Image 1 (tube, rainbow, N blue to C red):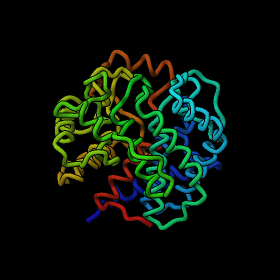
Image 2 (cartoon, rainbow, N blue to C red; image 1 turned 60 degrees about the vertical axis):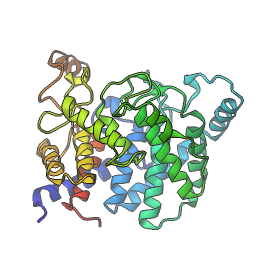
Image 3 (cartoon, rainbow, N blue to C red; image 1 turned 45 degrees about the vertical axis):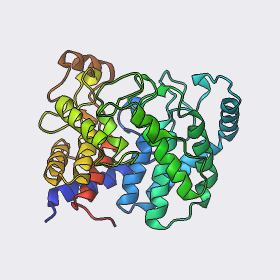
Image 4 (cartoon, rainbow, N blue to C red; image 1 turned 180 degrees about the vertical axis):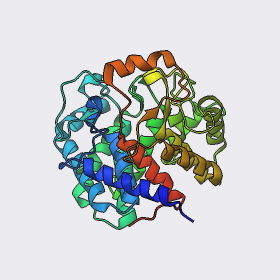
Length: 355
């Protein structure tokens, strides 16, 4: 039987995401945390995908329209960059599309690591899933999805910043997002060709996935290569080796840390990563462990149901926690990405039903 408390928290997650979605359709990463009052395509794509899965069609499509508007406003830039790449000309990272945008689609003039490819693949993946799930018309998004697909297909072998916006390189989970986006583009009929990404990832693997071509670091985001991006099957031996390494280095009973040398807010446990690992457990028949991660995530909720980005139990670098609090205040809450992953896991486990 579903747990009423988990069902209430899932419904509250939907309410919070809807309440904070901008009139433009953009989802702020966190509406109360100044550095995160912007929309990242990566975060937003996961939020839109969760909202689509739970039946919030209008909310998800508002986000996809926002993405389409961001791309169409920069169509000439995309065409210029792709043609330069085709001619073999160097492209300065500063010329690329941004990682985050203002909620109205503008470009904030702030010092931030800006060149990432993952979001430009992830939103096509989320859109294609939404169109198939609900039988929706993809025509309003086709031009933008085609532009985005051409962009990531052209630059997937180029270094960019990782999910965490901390390291430059060719990152495995970024490639998984790109591949998922290109498969989504084929579903939508705007394909840009399928580069041999899976082959490249396997060639750089050593019994488990590498965080990037240059680093063999264990990073919990690597779970997304299989779940949900499906570059590799969830039961693939390389994925199993990766999950085992994450469990060994980054899991202390419940909750998941990003990577061992994490200093951001002392290197706490991230709720979205716990739910991500829970989804991988669910996909491979480890339902009891999936429930344990869902229950841990739910236990971190504030009295009003808000879920933070991370919590400070079992910090990797406790000496750095107060430094970040002094700089930016307590960890971001509500982090809409955390709520999205709670929804995904609650849906998978039957704790909430789509409406």
